[in-house]
Image 1 (cartoon, rainbow, N blue to C red):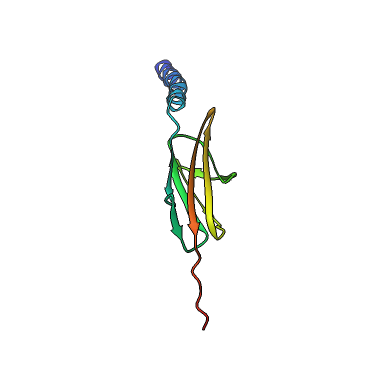
Image 2 (cartoon, rainbow, N blue to C red):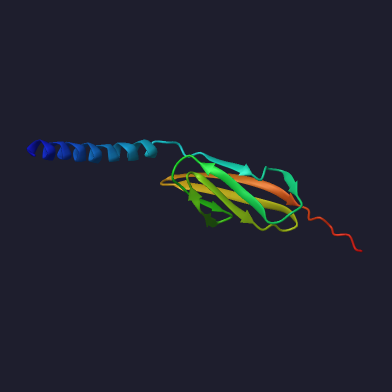
Length: 115
């Protein structure tokens, strides 16, 4: 029984030591922000448009100053467009690190034919 308590104590100690090492590893990662959709300098004919992408580590992501959910390093939200040029600012923040990507798209809604 005494050996069982020793084994449990050692397991607990190893777990507690591993936790800060894991946190330090993520803290040393570089924050990378990728915007997958929409592509920069494209024209779309439908609104809203889906803005999606990835971040390399735990981050808060804002699209045009609105916080969007991040799950498993991925984010996605629909954004209502206005006719003409639309500037989409995507900002990821993790601790003291901040990365910004800007995508500009043109919204040219399909004109419905009178009939």
